[in-house]
Every structure is written in structure tokens, then in C-alpha cells.
Image (cartoon, rainbow, N blue to C red):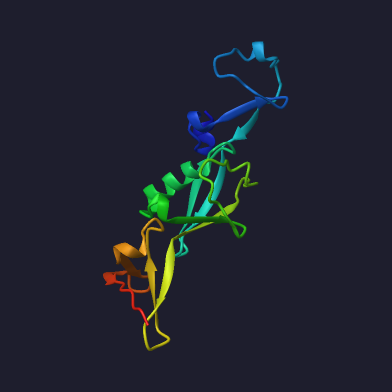
Length: 165
């Protein structure tokens, strides 16, 4: 019924009565619910994740969902690998994948931003820079980074070499 009205699947619904969550296995009368009482739908909430191209996606979540779970869902939708995501809320980096939305103070209809991890490489002898989207777990010793130029979405490989003076 609720799913038909607001589009939220039963497994995503959290119901409470008088501030206490209702146990799915118990009868409403055993929970103290009487005729004409009101039950609160306390979850889910919707958050929006905006990517670096400005695309805004809605996610139905609960306050107890972890940042890691959100990153998994963002990876599924955007292709940005979980380890490469910089997820922020109100200029705060959400870097603890085990923390919950509630712990970060994220509420219904809040907006998060996601960007792939990027660095800028200044070319020798000029002020020109190349933007690289990389896996932050890479080391400079492995020498090659996948470079995705944001304006043209052109994928190239750039080999970085160390020069000693």
C-alpha cells in the first residue's frame, strides 16, 4: 500500500509508534497500537548525490546506512570505483566508510557531491596542466595513470617519469 502511494518498497520502510520502532514479527496490538492511532513512517529518506558533471541522482536510504553502502550504490550508477570516490557533504569529506549517514548529520533531502579522485600534473617548461583521474591507491613508482580529460571524455595513458636535477 505505501509502495503504491509513495514508491517506497516494503523492505525500505521503517515504521515506529510513539517514538519506538515496530518489530516486523510482532502484532500491532502487541506493540500497543490501538484503533485510530497514527504510525510514523520514519524511513526511508531520500538523499541526492550530484556528480562532477552536475547529474543529480536520488537514493532512498535510512539514517543507519553507511557511507560505504552509499559509495557502492554510486559506483553502480556512475562507474566511479568506490576507492576513487571523494564523497562530500557540506564541504566535509565523508571518508569513513563505516560511519552512518546519521553520524555525519545527513538528513532527508540533503545533497552529497561525488568526484573521482583527481590530481593535476604541471607539464615541464610551461604553465599547462593535465588533469588525471586516478586510483588514490596507486603509487608514483608504477608510473602509469589513466587520464580522463574531463571536457572531451577522452581516455589516454600518461607515463610519469622522475627527473633528478
